[in-house]
Length: 163
Image (tube, rainbow, N blue to C red; front, side, top):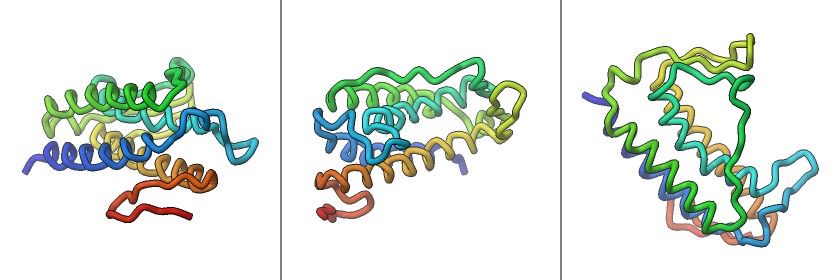
């Protein structure tokens, strides 16, 4: 049994939830953050939108070195631009995953920062980590939106949370 259809199904389900959550961000709240040590909503939401690109990266490279590839987030100034960015990274990640085979999930993939190795996992594990990171950061965004009294959609059910 191939893992690729299951990964695609999960990717699509999480994309639907993520799309709904990102669409809740008002354009005038992109610079808001709950604490001086927190990311702004812009940075957090942009990171969420870029994470499907990790699927492409996992399938087309053998690793990432933060020292050689500092993160340069896309500049988004509106919810429309954010959703467009998310759709682009999602389409690219999905296209690469559709072409992949289970054998493509096996090679080792190394995450490092210069000489410091942060993790060595399989390509498939990196893809699952990207999915987990989307869920994790989406939950952070949910807290940010709650703090702003912005109604949000239920993640895994029909309930809209209004606090």
